[in-house]
Amino acid sequence: MDSSLVFLIVIFLIGFIGSFISGMVGIGGSIIKYPMLLYLPPLFGLAAFSAHEVSGISAVQVFFATIGGVWAYRKSGYLNKSLILYMGISILVGSFVGGYGSKLMSEGTINVVYGILAALAAIMMFVPKKGIDDIPLDQVVFNKWLAAALAFLIGVGSGIVGAAGAFLLVPVMLVVLKIPTRMTIATSLAVTFISSIGSTFGKIATGQVDYIPALIMVVASLLASPLGAKAGQKMNTKVLQVILAVLILATAVKIWADIL
Image (tube, rainbow, N blue to C red; front, side, top):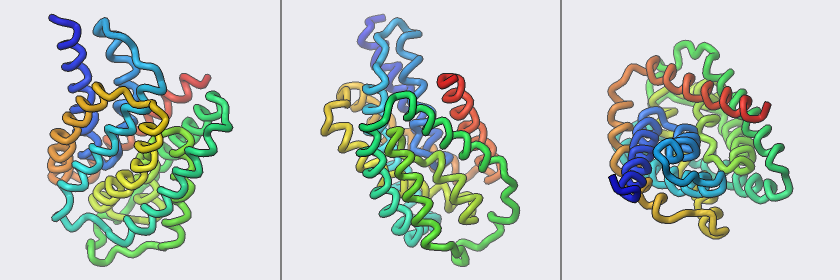
């Protein structure tokens, strides 16, 4: 098979699988696609991407995957507009601060920050979440200033490591703010979309985006993300929480293995 066709198929499948899972469990999907982009192309005899190229492609792809996911949830009643407003503005400011400040950090420090964030997220996902899915959607209340402060901190951390931060947003919404699972998944997609605006434009402005693979990933995202969101709406919330917990734990283990 022609190598350029193999390249197209491999990149499309990475985008499709990652975006389906991201639509289903409400994370931007860079958790899954980042390692896939780094390790899969060389397995098929294709040229490896650099870490900068992978983060650039991931940023653009997360931007479009979250648009697709939010669009699929638009009539579901699961998007909490007040939460999106408070957390969205804070995470946008935080991710700009983190992204700007990361220039002053070494590669090793950035990896350690990412490892700490992933470990915290993994621990939170295994904290029991009793009764949160019994709360009626129109009776969900949360501490607005706590939500804004946490979103700012997540934004700073995710800005430093170049991720949209959804793998941290989800456990914080579930464990600290006590938001029901389905509302967490839909709302975190919207907040992640806002968070990804800054990182996407930053990557494009600094020439870190390889446009052809990014375009293939975007097409795959726009097809797969709404399908994942539809699947997620039909699944048992406990199953969704387990899938999320496993993904986040796997990420934490992988990052610490690399650091150590």
